[in-house]
Image (cartoon, rainbow, N blue to C red):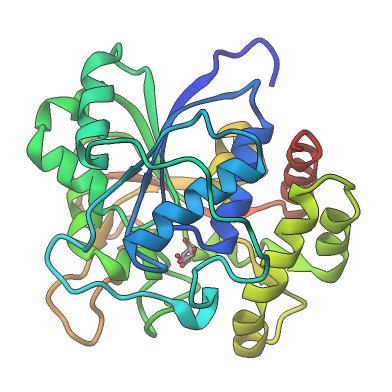
Length: 317
Ligand code: RIB
């Protein structure tokens, strides 16, 4: 990216090996992104682990200057669903990272979101959501005045043509907090969704993991080790040549949206049916007159995506 203004980001994340890749892509693209702060979400693993994982990843990348805030310890309405079966008991298994020297920033992640957006100029802040949307939804409920000031929300969330991963119909980030997803989709803030429909095209093949491992710094090999751990579940489940790499689709879209394609449609979240709870109903053929509340990304170019990730990783320690 040259000449374009930097995006000021608030990152919402529950790392999660794939989200480590997203955070590394963002940090490696320092000419494009200015990270105002990270809000750790309860999701893949409980909140204490996601806070610690954020601190560990920032330390590995030499960016402990970025504040990490603890978000809500649970979804808005429902008990927390975690995914240790994918990510391991720490949520970041596959590599032994030292306990972080830095501590989380004081105060709540929700208050950080509200205060940062209120202090910023209109359109200055972009929300980069890699996780369940709990903390953003809580901020929007507590401070509806921030909605018109948010530049946009770019989120890894949802699934339609690829159906679900945590249930037959629901994608994990939406399933964990479907009420939060609906609040965000109804906020009026411009939303771009990177659902499983596109992340399932971005497979971390052996060749791509080997390229990360060969970079010769500390972040590339560490990420390759993390993804080699978390891929087991998806390789067993899908039998593909690599596991889908979800998280980096969000910063990649912000770095080069031409890698992707989609359309503005209505996306609504099922919240009443036990059978299809958390399903994102994407009105791709615009059959209803429901408002077009999201840009829904359905496909992307995996070669350009992994080249972008590799280029960003090379700029890290
Ligand atoms: O469904 C994919 C999402 O669920 C990713 O964010 C992954 O980290 C898991 O949390």
